[in-house]
Length: 154
Image (cartoon, rainbow, N blue to C red; front, side):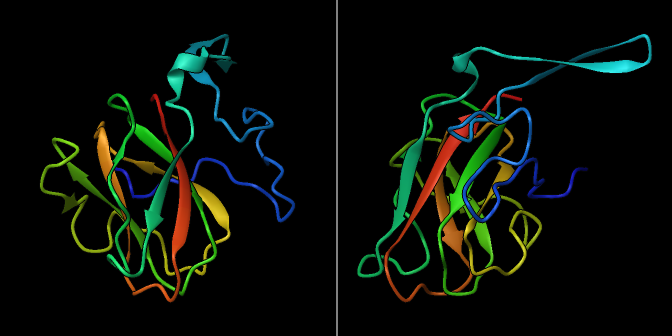
């Protein structure tokens, strides 16, 4: 079983992507293909392999550690998340079968959460194909937070 979340790419302190397969918008845009002559081929994929950027907001007056629901628009294997500055906490995902459904944590305990963080970086979560998501923090946030995210095909 894979560890969660699997970090696939990131940005430097200037916000510049630090992976040759990430474009200027921070979109992970690769497809791994079969081994040929002992080398793994990497090829570009179409724009349909990502959902497009969406926002998930933690509004302290509503819930100080859980964002509103986000519809990724389809079932994506991974979710790229730009984590804003935070009150130190782990970041995790809650999922549901419908946008207005009952959201439950993805994974058990800290298995599907980041390490404790104060944010300010990008990461990728393996969502297992869930379409409807909320982001959570393990500690109450002192002020409203805006996460930026998108679904990514696996």
